[in-house]
Length: 291
Image (cartoon, rainbow, N blue to C red; front, side):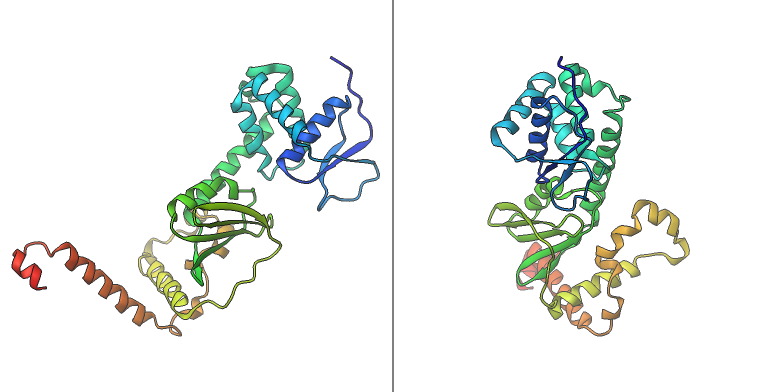
């Protein structure tokens, strides 16, 4: 194996996973280990030499194929998921992991305590936990026929939750905006797309939608048992940082100002119609028909 240089150089890339693979390729082709790998956007000024790495499809393909051939698809999938985490200096850590893959082969994922593996494995576990929480805590509001949600995750969760929500709301139009990473998921007519988005400006919430939200918050408060409240237990199962984007914790002033009673009556009427369509149990068929 050729001896590696450790020059005072920092790699800059476009922030994409393909761009990171290009950085791994550059490290091998130049026989060097950079001091750091930073995205072009948001990268701090460095006194070290800067090396701008362009994303190249062929270089990306060769690194991906090399890891899959040497270590298996599972190792490459681990690399891809670790890239989505909020781990500090993750790009440099992923470069070390890729080099370990080429050096140790298929045993790499069994080296759980190795310094190049352990921090990444812990970060992926943290991200998996956050994904499971968001599957339950994500809330939608309707704006002009589009279901919209805003989230503020620590990790880049959108690629991991997109399939779940697109399948669940197959016939709807969706927009999920990740305020932390300035990224949005757009879904409509069976097509899914990720876009860079700096900010999301929404129109004023319709009165009926606001009333539904107020009704949901009223329901959330009504089913709680005040004598059994345990704030510490609730925060452990529902971390407080998610509350800002959850309907049941927002806008308490809406109650009493919106037609909640009207919405409640509409819900009752809809339930009664559904009950009659199914047929009231215990009544003769002629009676059901007359109803």
